[in-house]
Image (cartoon, rainbow, N blue to C red; front, side, top):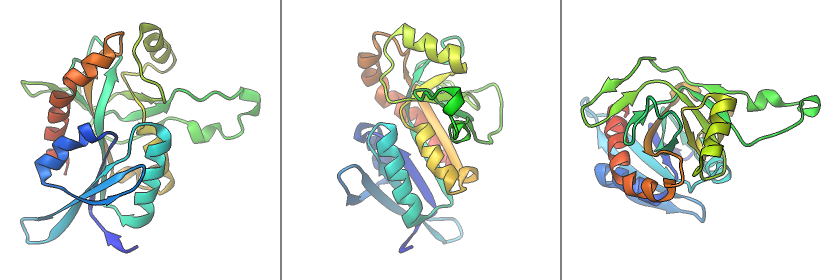
Length: 231
């Protein structure tokens, strides 16, 4: 492996990444058709140096799996942080701009009849070990330390889809990448190095398209505040 880093951040869209790039003064190192890689070297208190790498992978499970595999093959990783905005299914507990660190991940949009599903263990829930607590009230938003995240390749913008996912998985949030990313990381036996930070941008209803864009900047600002503590 020709590149050695200590901390890696992965997000989907450039507009989500922009705040991270600005906060850490990241510089573009490599651009492929499906992803961009930014890097920044920082000096720690003991004068040791570490590199922070940001991967912008595009949305969807296919792109995120490819990008994650690329990094796992080419970098030595001490920490992996997956961060971006999500749709909110738990309207009683989560509010817009809240940050959640889910510890259970499921893939929603896969179906195989039970009788011929020979590899269903490969699609079993993935669990991360976090300190589980109710929440931290940080005045401007709340930080939730557990929850269920469902992933699938579809924008969630109606109540029928909401009900389907909640009824099947009791999911709190939905995204388009986390399960795919964690599946790759699990195969490389690095789940213990992984943290997932999600920030709520909308209610997954008919207004999701506009509200997700309206709330993206503030939602990501809150998530990046938590990211700084995590790194």
